[in-house]
Amino acid sequence: MPQVLATDQLDSSDHVKELNNVRPKQPFFFLKPTSSIVLPGQGAVERPKGVNLHFEVELGLELGREVKNLDGADEKGAIDSIESYFLGIDMSARNIQEEAKKKGLPWSISKGFDTFLPISNIIPKSKIPDPHNALIWLKVNGETKQEDSTELMLFRIPRLLSDISRVMTLEKGDLVITGTPKGVGPVFTGDVMTAGIKVDGKDVEESLVEVPVVDKEGPYEFAET
Image (cartoon, rainbow, N blue to C red):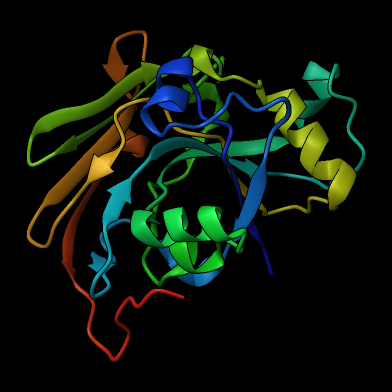
């Protein structure tokens, strides 16, 4: 069963500042459940009761082979291990995450709700010749909220895969999302998010995502831990 790993590397210094975080000395990563994935056209993002729901658009990697103890300087080995790319929107229950940070608790709840990872169609590697030179963007109701180049990553892809693979073996089919640029913010019930990737000023067709936000049904309602 493939796993989903998200890196909280905060793609740019501006994004570090907007969340009042300290610039990390090394990549930090966490797991998202596969049940958080929403495939293209397969549904909406569901906002749980009492949750301050935020978007974070990210470049995603699908691995094509096992990666273990990768040398962070091995750029060719890192890129060769990638089967394809995708666009992901890492949804966060920001109020739950902030509480977890203050109390030293895990982030699992804040990142792991069903539907908290809408993704695009798979993007062939040929469509993104250089993953460190692509523009990722996200709009809410047609208004641009995030738009920045992947060249602003604090840690490049070889370093990300190296640090992860020293802790846990990455396997064929695993998905890795690589961090978000500045501009993260809230969405509300009834909003529609659109997102994509541009290369040389043109949208990569397979990257385009459109997903609405709806209320989550069921008994869950946020309460302070």
